[in-house]
Length: 254
Image 1 (cartoon, rainbow, N blue to C red):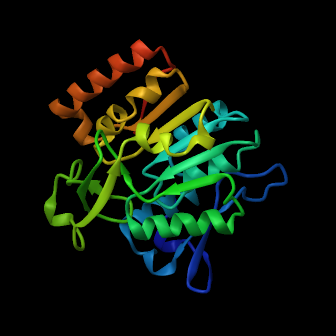
Image 2: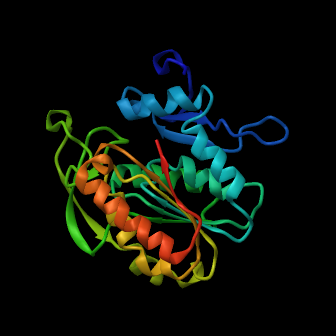
């Protein structure tokens, strides 16, 4: 991995420009990820930049998505951050892929929306500034870094690492949210979830979607909160739901 403090990114009007590690046939980057330059020293941003300027950020998951996405799909990005996976799906060579991206942190959602607009993908991507869970509510979003937001601090075991004020954000279920977006109905679904330990709640809130047979694949983060007993129990419950629905698999991304 490159040392992010040694990486030099182009900056325009206070925004750093991170070229995607995914390339077009001519060798150019498929998209750029933009973010305010003052975030360059953020731990989450350094992690992202260091990997993306090396072999590629979360390369196994990125390669999996490149293989499975196909024209006509709906890619649901829960915990979209600044849009790396969102932009990958929306610019996939197969074309005609719609994306629905959920990001509860207002600053991250603003950066995500900026990336969508700057990439000319407003017609392909729907951004929802909310968290996903198993019931509609207002919940505390606790901050670790730009990449470490967590509902009620699930998955963040060290409170001394929390930064800034707790934000209260809306939580929606995927079933309800997608019901409000009828233009996304009927498409085959690829679902990616990175919710810092809240993944079982997200899946529980998508029970109708999963039982409907549209979901071809779920890729979700498997962190400390999931490997703890309560997380394991929730994973087992969701695995049973998946098996009853007979779709591909629950694939943990590490």
